[in-house]
Length: 338
Image 1: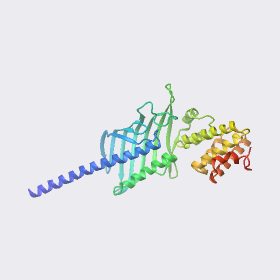
Image 2 (image 1 turned 120 degrees about the horizontal axis):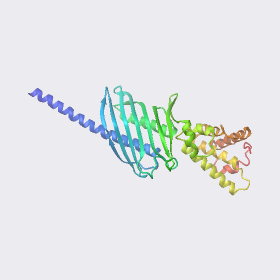
Image 3 (image 1 turned 90 degrees about the vertical axis):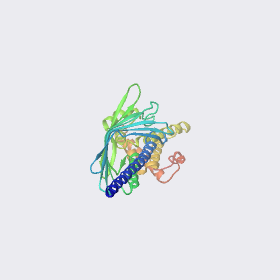
Image 4 (image 1 turned 30 degrees about the vertical axis):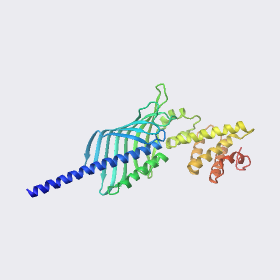
């Protein structure tokens, strides 16, 4: 009897411990998930609000051997503070598999993911892009983790997410494919396919070029073949690149009206490359400006002049010339081509 009692007591203690561990892992995973969604929201979703409430419907949960979990019909109901955004994320199927203990590779796979904005007045992204929903056909992601130091693994995941959202590519092993649906009103919905492409040790998010030819003209005019290629290869930078171009054109027009015989075209190219270099560095600035010349209707002489003036703008940024001094300097800079 005593032996049986000890066995039952030990089994009960183990069961309690497992319950406590499960509860602890639940709240730990919810905290990490909320942190990740807060980061995602601050970087991509409209506004600067944080995740205010998060409701999770796990659907049908099961185990995957040797160490893994799977779920079908998983759903996240997300309400954000600040921007008052209400999002629904649903997953047809999600699985996570850990290969190796205590340190190994964590592989996360998901299929049939749908992200939608519930509030019709709050597009999923910015008002400029009018994205109502995103359908992701599949996602596969791998990274190294240690069960003895889970925070390190989560920080690595956040780092890969930051790389992808900030630069459009990541050193994390990522494969995905999906479609973004743009809503231009009057029942005009235009799809834009996207996928990841591996380049060495980087995985980059890119757009389908044929779809882009239909979508891009609705956001910006005078897009050359090179511009479209650039947006296709750097879609997450496209919104800011368009803003910089618009800012450049507006400032150029203001000075043209204020100053007689103002060299608007020269100033526009110099300022454009200056602002691009200030934000992204000289290498990417020259990729952007050279791409614009590809497939344009300018003559060979005009393209050469524009490229030279773009280089002057890069030089001004690298040498910390104040933006307020550019209009004055270009009049007497021997490198400028009028």
